[in-house]
Length: 183
Image (cartoon, rainbow, N blue to C red; front, side, top):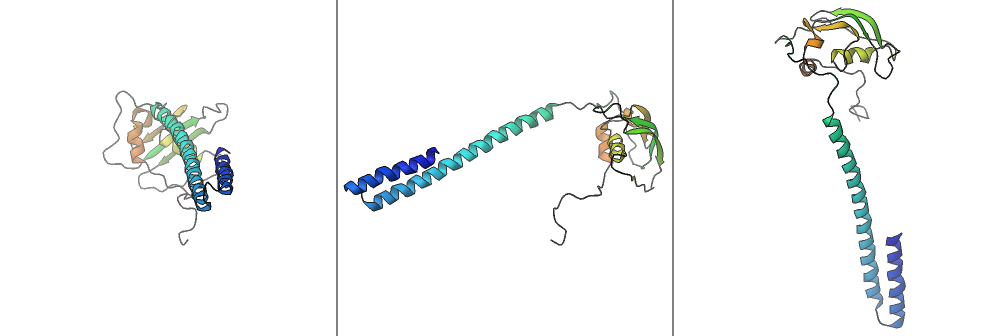
């Protein structure tokens, strides 16, 4: 509003001076052009200020997130995973509920073994616990009961960072591109 008002004021006072003969029409045109440029620059500065404020808020939130300590901490003396990964995974009577919904088990009494070199697909409807199984393998959470063993090491006795360096997940839905490869 202020920017528009200042351009109108330049036009008003300038046209009065042109009619009075104290200013030429060309000079008024220059003043109008300069005032429009200045108004555009001030408008851009206000956008920059707004973006800087948003960036400062985001940086503050990132700082809070980075300062947060994970709930799953490595043990005082973590058991190392074997130097050469074999790929054996076993779940023994694993049960888990998410902290936000402790009354609803995401996984209950799950037991299975994956032998080295074996290919396994975990399939099921939405909410069946597929993602939960991977979250437990990556030790984002610890099971409430049962145990998970990778290459002979109980995950509770291993460093979560070492576990996560060994595991790779290939998602079913690729979200990198919004279009097809051909596009």
